[in-house]
Amino acid sequence: MLIKRLYEGIENLSGIKLYSLKDMEKNSGIISFNFMGMDSAKICVMLDKMYGIASRSGLHCAPLAHETIGTKATGTVRLSVGCFNTIEEIDTTIGALKRISQGL
Image 1 (cartoon, one colour):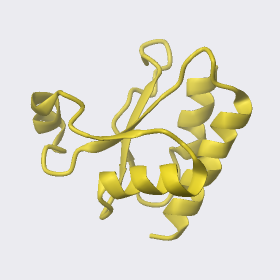
Image 2 (image 1 turned 60 degrees about the vertical axis):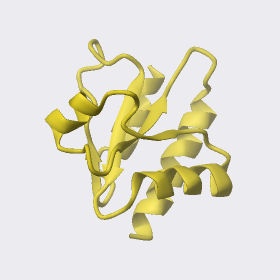
Image 3 (image 1 turned 90 degrees about the vertical axis):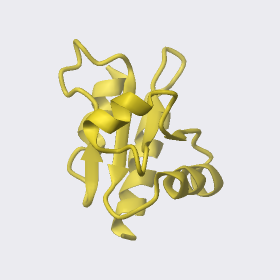
């Protein structure tokens, strides 16, 4: 399962805070996270410009949900995994986030 591979590949990165469910039976294929002390929009720009990885930052049209989890001021980074993604893309994303985390 690609979403599980992505989650397990980033869950122990330095400074990462995951907001998604670890229970893959209940995970919808979306991983939401922040690197503590780093703007979510900056992470998205880095993923795009440096690695060609599409992601979204912000409140994702759910400001009340972000208020509940304490991210209303910062938003989160969101990655979606779908049926057309490959293992190689997941591994590239894990590697990119690892390099970003090492730069914190």
